[in-house]
Image (cartoon, rainbow, N blue to C red; front, side):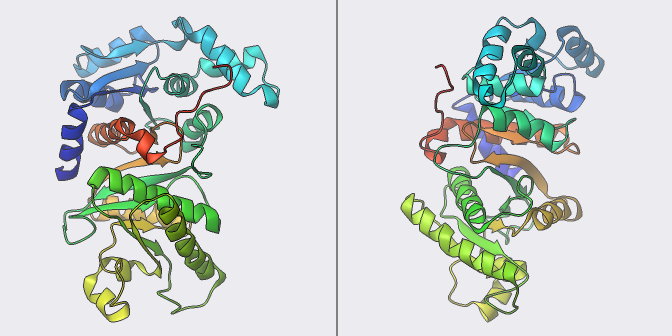
Length: 350
């Protein structure tokens, strides 16, 4: 709560509009209510209006200050269909197919963000990851300043000796199964940039492996080593102040006593605030272990490298998790141009 309280305080000074495609989901309704009550901005629920009102009434949740849009009845539906048709023309998309897609709340919500009718999107409580990411990749796409879309979990653990007073940024935990060297370096830089924006201190980025500085031999270790060097180079070119080190085992990255024995000269070892995993298996497993075994507050997946702010929350998220993710997405939107300087480009036909 320490962390998310600070995020909420910052967002209250610059309220944003967040669209929630899962308008009848009880946890989303509760989070949307809290979002408005805390003066974070305007929550936008998508779905059938009578069903949303019925769901809210059964939960005794007020819809005051909450905007409700039914894509099928929206005055913007035709223009959204036209925009989507333009975007997917090269794929042979027909008008009726575009209309069917826009009736899907995840597609409609993505188009709202693309058209600046919302500042960010949060979905995933009742949809698998692909159902959330596919519309975003087709409509919002990857930011011009990067070539890789990935995701980050923001973890707040009780033990403040770890990370930045208990705060850890972990990536990629939700998008790329087997990142290349270039993708892994992009993930490291994008996550460091998010950490820098949210925390305000110089990120210490550890690229993780089962080896520390050549203590084992395997092709995957070489990939992590190469990605570490490339990430440092990219960060320097992008004028991002951050420290990178790898390959590191996770104990060498987080525990000062172990780091002192293995890597006494490292600026990152024993003090890492950002953990970059070599593949999706390790990232996803580690993030869920920390969340449930250590009972950490987990906020994610925050999508990185996209042209607009968005998040794909876990189907196991509760209302507090969804509120926290929504606040982070709103905070991203405040200075998104600094995260991705060329983001927010025009859609075809604009």
